[in-house]
Amino acid sequence: FGFVFSSFQQGHQFSHMCLHPPMASRRSVMRGNLLLPGLLLSLALYQLLDATLAFLPAPLRQLGFQTSTPQTPGHVEPLAVAPKQTFLEAARKVTTSAEDVNDRSSALLGTRTSSLTMLSALPALTALSSTLKGAGKRMQGSSLALRSSAMKEDVGKEVTTVVLPVLGLLAGWLALMYAIQHAIIAVPGLTGNQYEYFPIVATFIAGYAVIVLEEQTEINKAATALVLGVLVWALVGTGLELTPKEFEGDIKETLEDVSEVVFFLLGALTIVEIMDAHKGFDIITKSITATKQRDLLVIVGVLTFLLSSVLNNLTVVIVMVSLLQKLVKDEAFRMRLGGIVVVASNAGGAWTPIGDITTTMLYIGGQVTTGPLIGNLLLPSLLCLAGTIGYEYVQMDGEKPFERPPDSNKEEDTPNGQALVFWGGLIGMVTVPVFTAVTQCPPWCGMMLVLGILGVITSLLHGEDDRYSLKGALTRVEVPDALFFLGVLFAVGGLERVGLLKAFAVQLSQLVPSDTIVAVLLGFASAVVDNVPLVAASQGMYDLTAHPANDALWNLITYCAATGGSLLVIGSAAGVAFMGMERNVSFGWYTKTVAPAALVGYFFGVGGILAQQSLGLALK
Image (cartoon, rainbow, N blue to C red; front, side):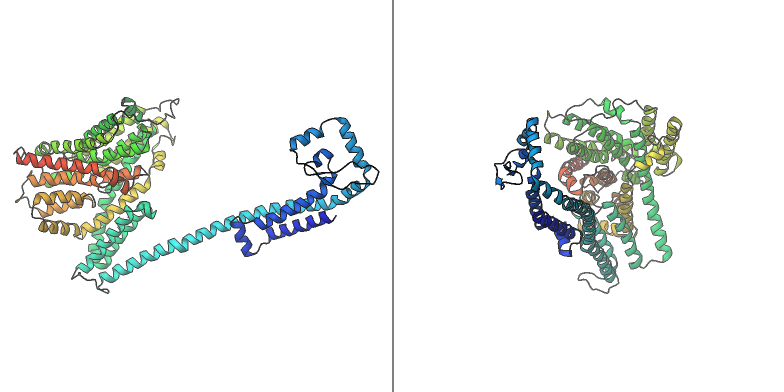
């Protein structure tokens, strides 16, 4: 009874401690520090086992203690320690023979003291069992509550140690920029209206830095871009002396231009999603029989170059990256090919009037015409492609094959209308420039027209099946990609509207007397800033009277503005789209992996243009 009562008392104390721990004990439980309670419970169970082993059959008693057979009724020999045995050996002894069972029964029934002790201990054992079971259940619930409390404490800690400081830093930055803009704080080196423009440029640079360091800061680039775009315009509205009507007109015009690009992007992404749902890319992937990495590199580069000459670069990247995701399993190799797609698409769009938006701008502005443009820039664009592919080609193992992803839908039937949807969508996107030229509608209208027609076709083929319908495709499109475009282009548009980009180009031309070097540097600048406002600035810098159409300077500007954006992943719409479609692509990865090849191709093309001019082969 002493052993049992002691066990009961210690078990009750342990359960009370688990259910009502002090604050310090709760922290210990949360940290897994249960050494002392575990020791008390072990001692209690040991004493309970000590008290109850006497009531067990002899073979099972030999696991820890052994009771000798009583010689006379009412006499019990003292307990003696026996050698340890395995449970299997003890169990075998229990089932040895019926005679052993009869002997154990006789011994137990003939032991009056053991029988009375067992009967007397049963209520205490039952109470102890019930107490410990209830305490275990309540302890489990208490543990869950403590874990939930710990999670809340962690979230609260993140709020106080990370979120609030970042928000405070943002508020402090805005206050500082406002103070500088209104000359409340003097900054050495700034004079006159530089106080008004410095905060805008500084905020733009800081925002771009956060986007570049997305991996380190773990801040989503789409969110950063949205904040950046709005803050640039907020500083324009509060710092520059614009009337409300002027400011409203500027921001609406910028938003109109940016929205056209965003709608174009959303249309192209949705079209590609519908094509992919119908397994349209299987038509091309099955026709590509290459098995080695080098062979696939050449095929992808040349195909991208040709497509981008008649198709918008953004559309080409979306189509080709989607194709690679269906064709290549190895993510590292696929990302590397995706970088080549970006370079090849920008190079392919440089030599035709409809291949790149900057080329189209110069074509519409009268700086270049169709025949001389193709004749002057086809060879440099091919050299850019050859230099980029050649650099990557020598880096790869000549015999190394690439692995295709498993065909999970191998046994499924081909969706109805596969060829119609795929070729209809592809041809529709290719003919968007033609539609724009004939109807004078902006490009996003042509893309939305193609999307609408595909929506009608899929509705007639599949009804309301969300796997193939326009509605289902819209739910699968990555909206953050479009928001990233919106934020970045909105911020760049703010710089362009207030004349900062043009002022930069003018100062650059004054510092660098050679127009050739200026054009090459504009290409490098387009890797950081959107090339559209840079080309617009160059159009305002140089007069057509001094540099007539198809002049050597315009050819060099056209090529550098189109291909310079490949040097950084954020330098072109194609690169931004690629970064959005491949989640593991970052600014640092692109700079380390793709930029060297892009730089080699860039200078190959510049050398080709200069060689043509020096040899007198340039067309006028």
